[in-house]
Length: 194
Image (cartoon, rainbow, N blue to C red; front, side, top):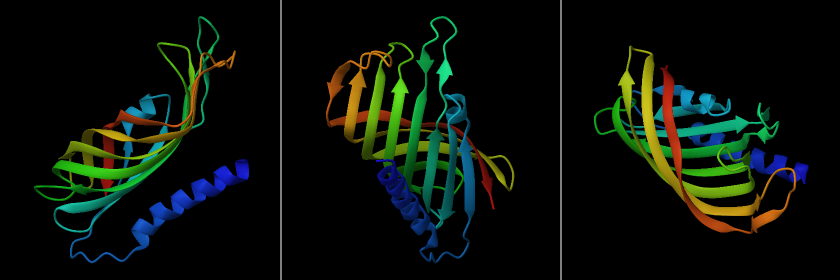
C-alpha cells in the first residue's frame, strides 16, 4: 500500500514538473516562488508555489503543501493535527499585468488528508481530487518582492473517505466516496520574483 501511495505522489510531482519543462514562448518571462504564511500558521503546513508568466496577462502556477506533524492538547492530552499531502497546478489571469494587481485563477488539485477536528474531536481521513477557482490581489513591494492576498473554493470527489467518531475509538461515523465543495487557498503569501 505504501509503495502505491509513493507511486501516486511521484505521478503528481511529475505532472507538476512537466508544466514547467514545456517550452513557453514569452518575450518577458518572469518566474516567481512564494510561500503562504497562513498555511505556516495552520499547524505548521510546509508549502511552496512556483509560477511562470506566459503572457502579459497570464501565468501558470504549481505548488504543494505537506504537513506530517501531530500535536497533543494541554487539557485532554488528545492528538490534534491536520496532516496532508497536496499538489495543485493551474493558471491565473491578470487584468493589469502579470504578477501584480488583481488576478483570478483556476486549478486542479489532489490531496491526501488525515485530520482531527478543533471544535469536535473526530478523525477525518481520505483522498480528494477536484478543481477550484480563486481570486486575489498581489501588491508589489519592490522589484523582487511581492505580498499576495487570495481566497478560493474548490470542489470534486472525496474517495477512500472515512469519518471516525474519535481518533482513539475508531468507530466509523461515515464512510465512502462523496462529492464536496469547500473553502480553499486562503492565502497571505510572500513572493520572490526572479
